[in-house]
Length: 249
Image 1 (spheres, rainbow, N blue to C red):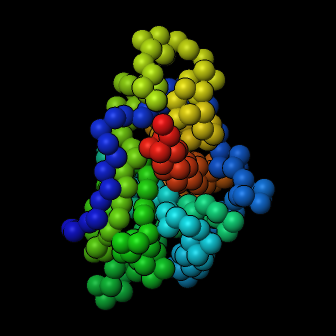
Image 2 (image 1 turned 60 degrees about the vertical axis):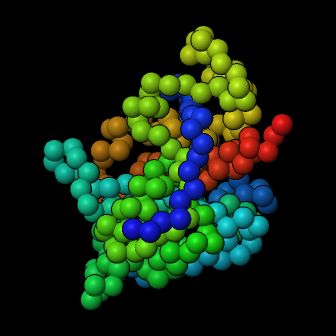
């Protein structure tokens, strides 16, 4: 697959395992409103959700979407080809979060497995940057599962094992006693004191029980929707933090 990929530099930006598990409900759009969540369990609803994302991008200077996906897990605990859910987050005055379920959508004459056109537009566009932990893998997955040539994926993430093994202190700080510090102290140094929700993303990724949950179940439970939405939003917020660190002396 020919992908336009934006690699994060080798410096690793990780957070303590003890980070608080917050929720997308803690985040507010610029107007102070809760960011709306749209859970789309039909192809038609997913098309409408994708249109919501595109409309939100029209009100943003940066064409950036936070992306995340959860694969169906078989009885052996291994990920299969089918994607149980995809999550998308756009910030800004019209910011929103969309959750869709591709495994429910029927294929149409070899036509991208029935994914809604609005979502295909987002994945295919080289002008819309797709960011998140595992974003490059998502690009490969949509090509494998749906035959879509994706472009402009920006990888922010690391595997679970690397998250467990390492702790980052940003801005060149390195303290061998970092893991003994309080979460609040680590927050101040890592990522320049950015919102705790960003830390919750990595903390939630360590929650293997949740990741192995019944993701084929639709409608999703409130807990599952909160988990999925927080992953996509946190990935998008991490991109803001990464941009801030890049241009901070």
